Image (cartoon, rainbow, N blue to C red; front, side, top):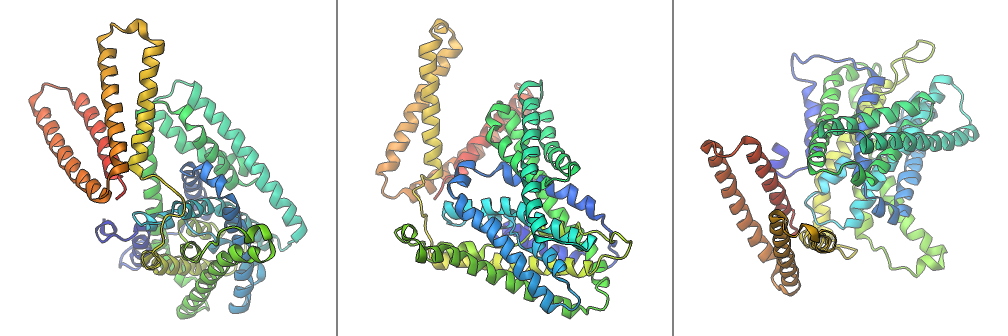
Length: 515
């Protein structure tokens, strides 16, 4: 609530709260089960990110997304591994790759929350969201192989490369197979809005556990299954009540999970600090700061290099418009780490296969927290200023949100009226259908007038702002009138609740009008 009051992204305050909550006198010190943390938090977080990813936009900018999600993750892991091996005494290359896999992926929630409400090109947001979806999978595969190398003491690059494609590819197969089964249940079984919402919460866990049972990538299973289910959602969820219920459940679930992870790390932080052993706290902080600086610089260099170096060696690339410096700078500076890195670090086992304590586990978790703190707080607070200073504008032609709503509504209403006139003339005497047809005609005309007025409007922003203010006042009075109706006992509470839902939808449409 404080974050909303002063207009700062809430993940920043979650980090600050997590840092301070563990040092409150009398707070319990928790010992968390690493496997349980990984299982509980990662599947729904990845599934939610996949669900809200636009497949069309993802495919359009897949080249840039792949360079960040795979190339940058592997390069960051490689550099961090050797830097940690050089900086931290007793840190093996395998431990370095483990740390690199943990801190390499930026967080989707952090970036989109910080960018919300800011004038950022849609292309930039799509690339960041697509990257954060796929890079979780690639970084967790790096983490998985590094962890296996540490636990077994054996590692072969050729074997690991082959296993990478098998583990990732079969994870996708398992995810798509499981998604088809869940699709059939939603589509053909007699579900209710509550059952549909519960099944969507169960789905990422089913996909994850199914893939992990066969020793494939549960992460790739969740991501691929989430993309498939999202793409076919219009066939599974055909009622507004189902969609609204599911949206509310997932928004609440993801918000609580993000908050809970930082609270858990805060409660566990004193034990982690005590477990640093021979490493003094100032030294551990210095390690975290150095790794953070390395991660930030690598990302900036990689973004600019991958955009400009190909132009030097390819005639086709050199003929394309210059990418400039504003968009690459924003993409490079938006690499904030978050909840996935925390959950991954916490999933490191407490003991090796021989029963010995896992080497430097507490130090790795502490460094991860420092990296999240620096990238999220420092970059998160300065990113809005960087966007304003660069003056970056929309790179691709995009209609304002409310114009899109009006255009969509116009097409849907026109289709409905045509369908009535073409296929349902036998019901022309139905008074309800007559009233519906007149309503469609009025709405079609209203949307046409609105879209025409937008085209000729000179002072568009001022008119839209006035429109928002007037509609907010009207909706406020309508809510007061609904409250009066509750006390009149003329209408049932259920009827009034449905009217409130419709009013909420109208209010949401108006509030999302782009100024």
